[in-house]
Length: 241
Image (cartoon, rainbow, N blue to C red; front, side):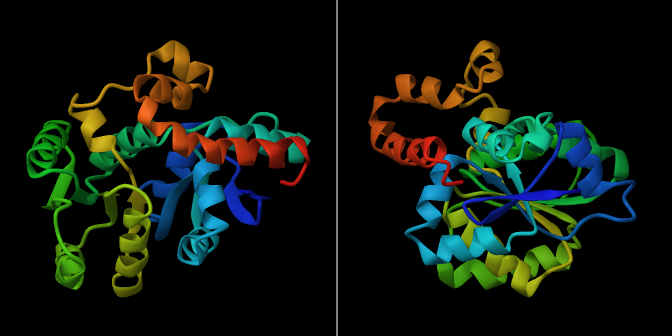
C-alpha cells in the first residue's frame, strides 16, 4: 500500500476501511507487525512541539488518516489520491475485531476502566474473538514491563491499547520494543463507545467529517484543543503540508 507525507509524517493511502483491514491482517498468515496509529490534525500539531510524540509518529509503520483534515490535506497535496477516505479509528477497530474473529487471531486488550474492559471483553467473546488477555488502564510505569511480558506470553498478534493520547502511543512504542511480534493499535476511547458508555456523533455528522465539531458542541471544555485545529488550518491554506 502506498504512503504519502503530511508535515513529514508518512500516512497510508487507503481508499476505504476494508482495504486497510485486508492489508493489515490478510488471511492470517501474513499479519502485519508494527504500530498502527490514527492521524488527525491535533496529533500533527502536538508532534511538532513534543519530540517524543514526533518520534513515535515518524517511526510508526502504519499511520492512517482518521481526521477529515488529514484526508483533505492528502487530496490537496496529492491530487492523484482523490479516492482516499477518512477511516474512523472506532470503526476500524470493530472491523479488525470481526476479521480477527474469522481468523481466530489472538487478541490482547489494554486500557479503560475495569468494568468497561470486562464488558468489552464479554462483547468480543460473544462475537467469537479470541481474547487471550486483558489489562485495565490503571497501572503505573513501574508495572509496564510486567504487563508487556504478559502480552508476550499470551502470544497475542493484535494488541489494542485504550489509554488516550499520548500515553497509549508511548506504551505501544515500549511494548513493541520488547515484544515486536504483534500489531499494536492505539484506540483512545473506543472501548467506551463499543460498550455504549459514550455516544458517537450521529451518522449525519460522521459522514460530513464533523465529529470534531459535534464533540466540541457537546463538550465546550474541549475548546482549547480546537486551537490546534486553527494552527493546522493555517498550514492547509498556506500549502505548508
